[in-house]
Amino acid sequence: MENVVHSPEVLIVGGGLSGLSAALFLAHHGVAAMLVEKHRGTSPQPKARRINIRTMELFRQIGIDDAVRAAGGTLAGYYRMAAGRTLAEAELLEFTLPGGTPDWDAITPATACLCAQDLLEPVLREIAEQRGVDVRFGTEVLGLTERDDAVVATVRGPDGETTRITTPYVIAADGARSPIRRQLGIPRSGRGTLGSAVNVYFAADLRNLVRDKPFNLCQIEHPDATGAFASIDGERRWIFTTAAAENPARDWAATVRTAIGSPDPDIDILSVSAWEPGMFVADRFSRGRISLIGDAAHVMPPYAAAGANTGIQDAHNLAWKLAMVRSGRAPESLLDSYHAERHPAGWFTADQSSIRTGNLRDLHSTSTDGTALADPLVLILGYQYPAGAFVPDGTIAARDRLDLTGQPGTRLPHFWVAPGRSVLDLIGPGHTALIGPEARLPDTEDVAVHRISQPDRLGITATGAVLVRPDHVVAWRCPATSDGVIRLPDPRTQLRHIP
Image: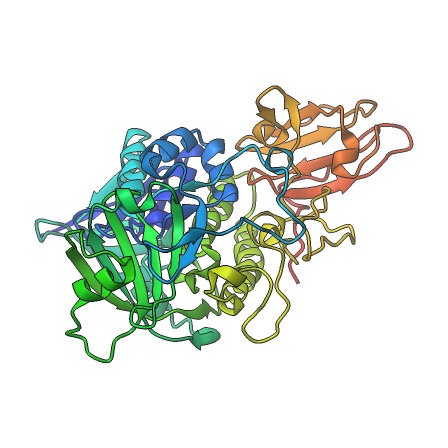
């Protein structure tokens, strides 16, 4: 039997971190979304763990940052790197960044978080359901048919029943092998495969060995078991990553015990999975009414811990644009800016991830092929879109250091406007004008207005203003006015710079 459903404003295909985040961001903007995922439950594998400060800023915006931190609570102190011949012999490494350790409180209101994917996805799913998202696991998309005004998805539910879902827009968050990307005929480019590796996911009580060296990653330099341990809960769950074995029947428990350097712990091998680090970026992030996010759009090595974060940030960029188009506050052409912005950002992040070494002793100083390394904080916070839904003013943000001063196309610089309240917290679901103390703004619809006592932090004077998009990105800047009257561009029609 086939049912016909005409309900969601947006259909999300894929229930991983990117897809679930897209559902939450759309809910934040009041867009009725349906999420379908072919698997019956969230991922049983830890996979991605590091939620960086930019992603935590996005979670803070929608009020779920505390829940995310709670989900990863056992790893709260496990942010350091370690290295040694074995885990038993390893020592913590000094934490270094180019230019020294930053004053985190001066650059972000958020804190990074370690939370294993198998713990985070259920939390995101539960919150999405609480906020009204129609979440359907065990539901597989069999095919998509594009029409001029909609997309028709044929899906099969957990009971085997086939349903046709008609929706104006589809977000494909269906992974690195994305059937939807392949159906659209979108090729991928990049550096390709960069090697082969194996993740050995195991359980063992290693608390006595790590008590004095709580680590995120621990590099193992034993000649018979070279690789790295990743903390999943800091107590009993771990991943050991090493080069792919010529013998697939290798005694992995023995290898892990060698890397640990102690014969004592009982080791329970939970899974062994081969994978290929590589760079594969879709040539188009959107086609027609269908947009790609996450691994469907870009695959990158884990050396910058950027893959899942980049996918979540894709979703954040796309959600407010879909909301504005669905509400009639912007023309459909606004959606063109998704590819214009996120493709170069995804390419840059994937390429920078590809040239970074996996050697924890040499993370930020040497690239694998001599390509210049961007400052790690630029990768996380400081990228400037070259084109998109903003009006450029000719100012260019540096890539060798964090350089956020209100340049259009960059993330709004953080500073505190009240105790515990960042200027980023002033940015709501719509556009926001931040004006100097002597500026005047005629009545305007659909734009929230806040007077800022530190206009110089935004590159403006007391009579100037910036217009900020719902994703914290500066859309327009007026450094000063002769009469103090701010004349904002119309966000519905004028904030578009797409070659």
